[in-house]
Length: 280
Length: 277
Image: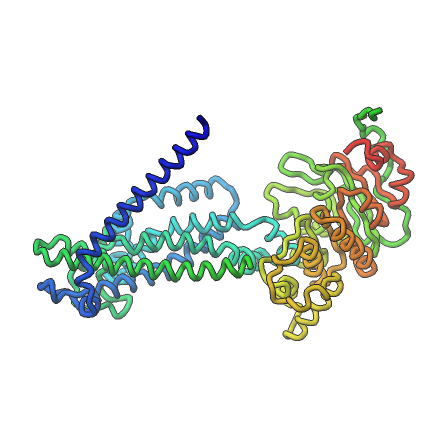
């Protein structure tokens, strides 16, 4: 009887996994079938057009890359530094427990709220305008809680004996963190970053809120440029009545997926490098 | 016939004037004066006073939880990093109290090296493990100088011949005994005066243990060594003085041969003859 249950459980788990994978595969297949035909060099390097067969995606692709680079540049140093403070230096006072709870809550706040914050803070109060910089900063705020939480988790997993070994040689706290703890925690930190940036690159709502334009005819050339991003462009095409634009939307999704996978691949290569350095 | 387990008593120990002063004329290298240690509200060490002699090996023995490791870690202020830990009393090293507010803990730990129970090499190369302490303390100016210091330290730890051809391989690929000797080499590289060893051989096989013990014997010419051990034969083999701890107190401290053959306290005798602990 116990053995039968064991087998049954394994079978159920297998079926559930297959359902999940099959729906994902069906989705990708569907998008591929609709969009693959539009994936030409002209599409990748073209600009928006009222005519579906002449519309391209270069402006949105570069917009997404610019925005995500700004997000990385802001969220990684701030998030990792905040996590180091909370995990390594912070005491367990009531104030800090309150901060901890709030960071956890912030990770679950709907992204549109961050859009409103970005609009009020970056676009208006700081006068950054509807620029790549304002967009990247808004997304950085959005992913900061995830970066902080996952970095803390990674730091906590570094063994006490490693830290003690460093302190015992006369290392300061900072030297111990920089030379011993961070390299060991790096794979965990990068895993968190992959999750955070995957979320950021797919966000639409907060960027629309801060006023990313849906129809731009130029690629951004600095962090001050107005911009659009891939998900917004896809959304724009999907909402067109003409059926030809649906193919463009599907092709846009493929480009977005490719960008996402490239970004994650880079992070995974870096992570494996660290892991090899730590283990071998 | 089974030996009845008797509950040892501390009665009479408090009455002994000063269990922490063996006969010796040399000035103490390390001296604790009425040291108390608290983990939060729990008092883990009670009124420890002891004088540790230079260039000898002093062993701390006692059952688990008796405070011997805690006391060892008060000697390089390693307990400072434990939240809620508190010390009162004094620890003098070369006559200066290391718990004075102006003492630089980082500088202190360079002078008082430590080797841990579980070998903890850094996940880096063998070379980098030894070089790390030199680098962070700014002790090696040039690359050749650094390499020379690394070689010297590995030789002192009797490890050089085994690793000289694979200095740039990961330290984690070494055997347990080699890793522990690497940790000793790493500690020696920054040229401490005192070496604290917290059960350095407890996770090693008999042959690796023997190598560590031989090393301890060689090193005492240059260093003052304090070793915590569970293993009473080890204490008897390597140490010149032995301190017996029980329930956070120092019960008896004397020449090792005296502790093991003719202890003054009944409690010590019961412990070293294996009646409890």
